[in-house]
Length: 397
Image (cartoon, rainbow, N blue to C red):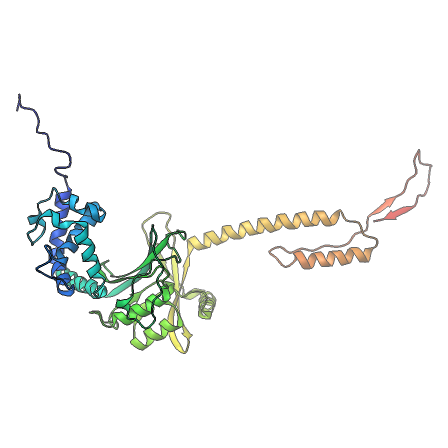
């Protein structure tokens, strides 16, 4: 209206869009029963705690996904929100202080966190009416900064009793200078997390797969009815034996350390007529074209089905690589030939011996090198005007 100044809101009094996201996330957490599940697993004194651990976990989840803040700023994050809209418990925003959040995180270390993840995942699958036909497993490393003391674990201690060892290891984020911890996650074919855990910074992918397959036996998943998909870290003799015992169907990439890889490739390329054309896997015009060949191969007394995949992009890269190698070798041989031509030998047998050595050194590469020894005869003419019909002595090089 004319004559009335526009309404001025205090800075930070309302964040457009953040409220909607927070309410949506709170609703999702409620559907997944995160608060009830955490409270059922964590030991806490109802009379001493102003806010239950489950509510604190939900508060941290909302903060992480909306506007990630450190623990000491979580309380300020919720200053401008209607807490009764987000949470089922009634409390003052001062209850979301960093001390309360820190104590909640300490309590989480005392429970079976894998079981908590699986319980939430089971609720999600039930709400979404999703069926798990295959699971995809992978690990990553998360780097951190600061000082962390290395921990020596007792081999006889249970996994729940071990403290996370944040230390240096193989960094998948290419930061070997920083300490890290590992994170393993298994998702369904739709990307829904169904299993996850954290590991020490120097964890081993191969051991993780082995222990995860064992732990999944006690989960809600039936390993005999789902397909386990993982990278080549899964392919060890111990893991193959374990999956054979548990009758686990799996898809992975067989590393070249297995002799079966070379044998399968040899079979595939020996029967070119049985290649099956797959075509492009993405919609780009320059997408690579694929074809596959199926074969069976025995590994440690058990027969497995192997697929050999041929890519047009790989063929193109290989052709360019061979072109570079041919050009480099041609340049090197030309320089060596020029050097050999400038040498002088006392006799023809010496020259033939040098030529034979040259052919042995340079005749086993990508080029075929041949040569013959041809004597060079020079006429020794004296100074001055030559005489008519004069015969002069010669010299052979």
